[in-house]
Structures are given as structure tokens and as C-alpha cells.
Image (tube, rainbow, N blue to C red; front, side, top):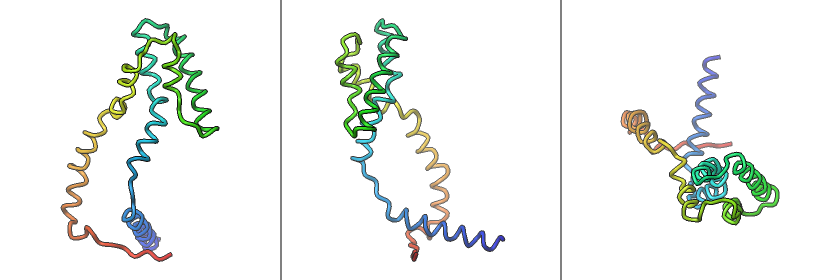
Length: 145
């Protein structure tokens, strides 16, 4: 029924408020996760740079694919560090040097328009709601389970 739906939504919002009031962001953990996953995300860029340097796309793709699978297994099954970049740097058939690889691995290459879209969303959607409800900001809910 409709009244029960409102009670359910109220309970959900109380739980959400309780969770969000205690939320903690750990930037170092985020950076570690990026370091673990970025080499896999960058493989297409690495392949493109190798092709620009004169390499055969299919051969490079196969080499990178094999290295990626080996590194992924090492990370996921053995709990070791991601060594995909070291594997690529140690392969003398590949032409990318450390400085070019570092440039390709810049996390900013992978975020697209996210910063601009986030700022626009906050300015156009979130801030008007916050301004209209500023008397409610800071209210705490008491959750008892």
C-alpha cells in the first residue's frame, strides 16, 4: 500500500543518511587500486603507440594479451603486484621506452570529461537542491537496529 511504501522509503533514507554520515574516503587506497588496474586499462593505448612506432598490430596485440593474462593471474590468483609494465619494458621486441610508457599511463588519460561533467552536475542539479533545503543540512538521524 501507499502508506507502507512511504514508511519503507523513510527507513531506506534513514539507513542511507546513517551510512553517509560516517563515510570515509581513503585516497591512498584509491591510488593503490588505480596502480593495480591502470596497466590493464592502458593496453589499447600501448598497442596504438607501438603501432605508431612501426610495430605489427596483430603481433603486438598478442604479446600484450599474453603479458596481460600472466600479470592478471599473478595479481588475482597469487596476490602479487601487477608487473605488466615491467613485462612490457623488458620485452626488447617492443619499442616503447619508460618515459613514453609513463606518459601513456597517466591516469588523466582515462577520465575523459568526468571532472567537467561532475562540476556541471553539482552546479546545475545538486547545488539548487542544497540551497532550497539548507535548513535541513546537518540534521542527523538516529538508527537503531
